[in-house]
Length: 253
Image 1: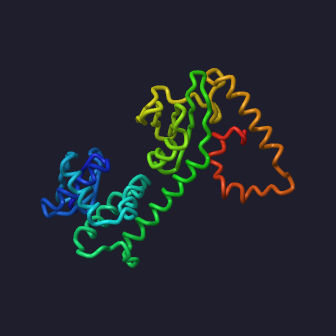
Image 2: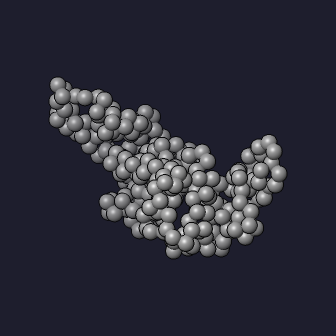
């Protein structure tokens, strides 16, 4: 068995593709730098992530694919599902090896599986945009903690920047412990040393602005007043608003 080791980044995967064609050897297994090798491993290659080869492969894919298919690969990667890198490696090889586009080859198992995964990530992106709830801190920064199943937060940045362009905000993935901060000019990735102070998914009142406490209470009152108890359907409610988001939503407290 031929094994390629790399740093498990997307640029690293692109370098794997580059090295596979350069060496004319395609791996049967992809491992992280510290993963245990499987039995019967015959050859091991360590792939170093470099910008130039990664960029060459990325540009090559853009020439071969439509925008939709091009985005599909990134969406699938952000799923973080096990063995997705091996799935994408097989698909990318087919893309480069075929003169004609394989985008409509719905008999291809790897293409169908990639589309299936990308659709799940796209749905998670939609959920983040729908159910993000910003809470105002005492220093006038709006914070939206989230815990998505897939690493879809980067895909939602354009929406948040356009929708909330006139205020400073942080969207933070509490599951992966990183987020993005918007300072009215640009968006930068951040990591908080002590993570967010989120008892039960809500900001601690010690760092919450006085206005926020009032608006949360008003929002809860409004939500309660428009609820028709006789028409409550919890099963349908959970279907349209996954329960994992409830702890970050003031109206659900």
